[in-house]
Length: 409
Image (cartoon, rainbow, N blue to C red; front, side, top):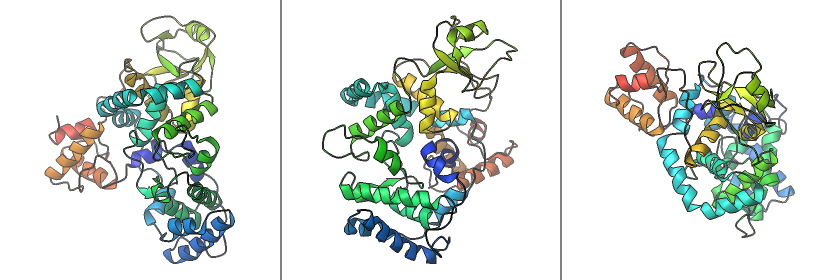
């Protein structure tokens, strides 16, 4: 029904974010950088020729680009700014919900041998690899809404930013298919070109994807071993070391005014001297370096995070994302959730509750279309109307208060 706009601001990987935050660059050729549907045909024809010159088999270029046409949705996503700020408690509520935790434990058992082998070879905790898989594609069950060659063609031809970059990513995509690693029809993913069960951009694929199942192909779409091992290789390359944790929850003394921020590292002993303690009240000691983050402010949970957390953020430059991966990895491993509650009396909703919220909106006359659990513009507008009717602050946010007002329990 709708695209989850929250993922555009929170869960879009840095490798994609880099692609859309650069300066506007010139067009591919004169007249082909126009945002009009009429201009894209000649641009795509030019791209086919460039791909073939770069070694792509002609039949692959035709198969993957022959039906490419102007896609307003791709262009809109590439230029629009998020309408709202997703609070971290909303973000965590739908990314790390009971269903994802249950599924994670199931897949941990199902792929135990593969994950153990990956952990041994790459030195990346199996629960962390599993958590990335869960967050990026719901364990391979949802990989995106776009045929990525067509999305990349739109960004290369009609996009407002980084056309040269997206042209390169498109040609790399066609080269991957031409080599036979991933079938041409299977490039389904994000509007920005990421594909596969753990959402790699083509350039990242070329540098870090691995053939872990030994079939001679690096297939991050159809091979779970290849996808998980490639993620482990990514994290290892980003600096993950299993000799240290990602971090842990702590308590901060009242009135604390010392250093904080994810780049301000100090030894655990130093943090102990500053008055911080483990969440269970234990003291801090040792040479391991960590940084203090308080993602919801002084009244919310606090964490000491190591450089392993920086590796998680390299997958997606978002503290909320890093914590979602960290929390899911802890919970699928059977450990406890964070202890300190988020500082809100109006918490976010799980995916199942969002689905139910849409049903309740429809039932109460706020038509938002067929329920699918994704919160996009139509659902937000329905929420705003419901909030106004029931005397709630009008936010458009899928929260407990509006859910309860509509009859949710």
